[in-house]
Image (tube, rainbow, N blue to C red; front, side, top):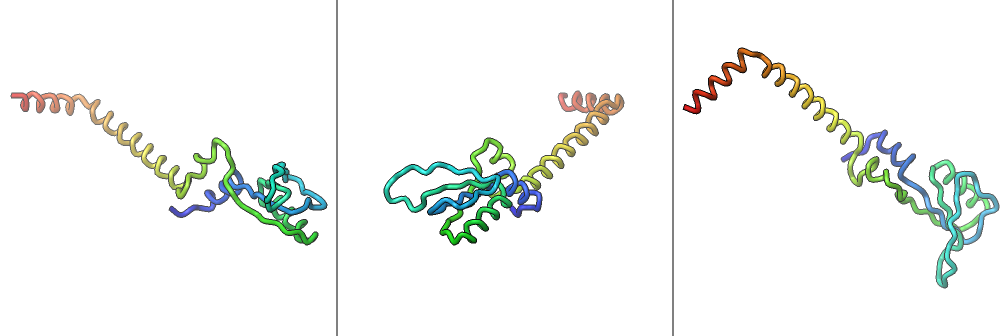
Length: 137
């Protein structure tokens, strides 16, 4: 299903994070960037691993890396948080899911209210009970 603007905003703000891998440490690290230690194993490609939780800090770090002429690689992935499957289900729109839930709930509330008013009418209830007695024989 197609994502709405609200869905895309939720993804960008609360779900996606950018992993940036570099060969050497940049001269300055902007605010909002955290460094994850990389294990010292032979054959690894990059020496430093940075994680940016929003696009502003990602753009700032990429600008620093470009101005200093460093080689880097980026990867955008989902955060590992408990709320991610609820606000960004894979291939589904949260907005449309909420619209359907609201419309079904409101239809059930109005339908039950209408049926309860209909059932509380004493003439209708008497006619219904007489019809049941007639069918029983």
